[in-house]
Structures are given as C-alpha cells and as structure tokens.
Length: 309
Image 1 (cartoon, rainbow, N blue to C red):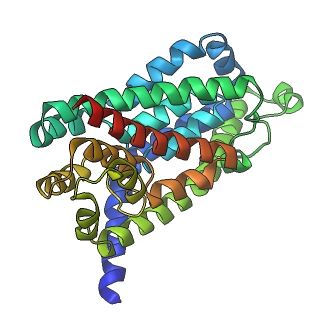
Image 2 (image 1 turned 45 degrees about the vertical axis):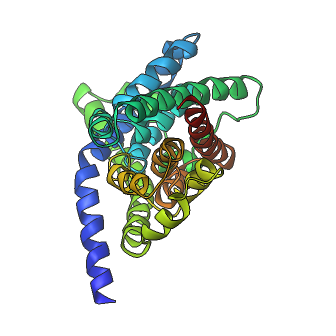
Image 3 (image 1 turned 120 degrees about the horizontal axis):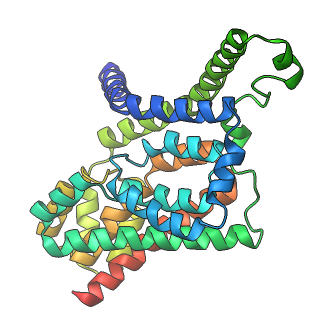
C-alpha cells in the first residue's frame, strides 16, 4: 500500500511539473481575457471565419506537444475566452494524437507507412470533428453555454462602470490586477483539481493494468482488431509517445497495421484519465461529441488503413 501511495505521489508530482508551464500560461491568458472583457472582440474576430479556423486549429493541434490531459487547461481557457467550439474541437482532437516528436518516433520505430497514416488520420479526424461541430452548433444542437460553471471563474465584471469613473489610473490598474488574481485563482482551482484526479487515475492504470493482456487480445490479427484496439485504449492508458514501443511489441506478436493505427489513436484520446478530465469541465453533449469523434475516428482509420495496406 505504501509503495502504491509513493508511486502515485511521485507520478502525480512529475506529471504536474511537466504540465505546469502550459497550465499557468492557459490560466493566465483566460484570466486576462476575462478581466479586460475581451470575449466580444474574440467572437467578432472569428465571426465568418470558422471554416478557415478549423483547418488552422487541426494543424496547430498536430504540432502541439500537449497530451490528452495537458490540453485541458488550454481548451478551458479558449472556451472561457469565447472562441467558437468548432476550431477548439478540432485542436482538442488532434493535439493528443500527434506531435512532431511522436511523428519522428513513429517513423523510426514503426515505419514510414504507419507514421504517415497516423498523421493523415489525425488531421482528417480533426477536420471532420471541427466541421461537424460547426454544423451542430449552427442548427442549435449544442447550446452556447459549454463549460460547467464557466470554468469556475467569477461572473462579476472586472470593475463596474460607476466605480471606474471615480478611480484614478493607478487605482484602476490595482483593481484590474486584483480581479485578474481572483479569476486566475478560480479557474486554476476549478481545472487543477480535475487534472490532479486524472493524473492519479493515470498513475493507477500505468501501475496495475498489464499490457500483456492487450497483446493477447490484439496480437492475433482478428477481423475485429481495429474496433477492439479503440475500445482497449480506454483502460490501457497510452500517450501519443508511450504507445509507440507498446505497439511495436504488439506488432511483433502479430498485430496488423490497421489495428496498430486504431490503438495509437484510441489510446491517446479516449483513456480514462483523459475522459475524466474532459467530463469535468464541459457539459454532456460536448463530452459525448469528443468521445464519439475519437472512437469512431480510431475505428474508421484502422479499417481504412487495413484496406489500403
């Protein structure tokens, strides 16, 4: 028991340290936008440009170093800032599936074909997710309020208009700085506690879920391989990089490349820690969309790659 507690504590500490810079930047940006009430300007900037922004977001996500849990603070910051859900969903999907490092490692360990297939599948899933979300928002399937409790940030205005008229310039900046700290605290606590829970779940899964049973199921090259790989990615946590040596070992046991692609995508996007973090900050419909895009994308990519290969 003590060994488990020590392992989980060390795992959570190391994961928190690696995430800290991205977490602080995301929370700070969202708090600045909230404090200076820049949401309206951001909405205007995206008005009529969502189609182009979805494509840009998919590419940016593929270049992002963030994992499925690490991307949560950035997503919450963008949602709180009023950025439309469509480009956010596109970034959200592609970010944990691909990064420059994971592409290079996939290429060197698993081969050129699987590396290119992984990149193309990531971009395709991100684009489908973004444009589908844009359509669903347009027809009213998804409501405007997406975050639970508005990411925990205060709903009060940064400074009421009456008080501003009586303040000196220095007093206004002090008031804004104070409101910024309040917003940062509220959002940091709201998101941070769920990220910590996700890290604890991740640590327990990594410690107690043996990958050998995954190999026994996926190593036989059966017809349901891509579907099983996407489903097994839920309990068998793997990031876009940590999954690579696992997949190499499974392929040595007989797993085909289509099943390998499904596992690479499904394991990175739909693990239990990732879903716990996603569910904690967004409402039900958005969570189900994220899960559907990830799972269906993983299965579809696997079967298509099987046909091509």
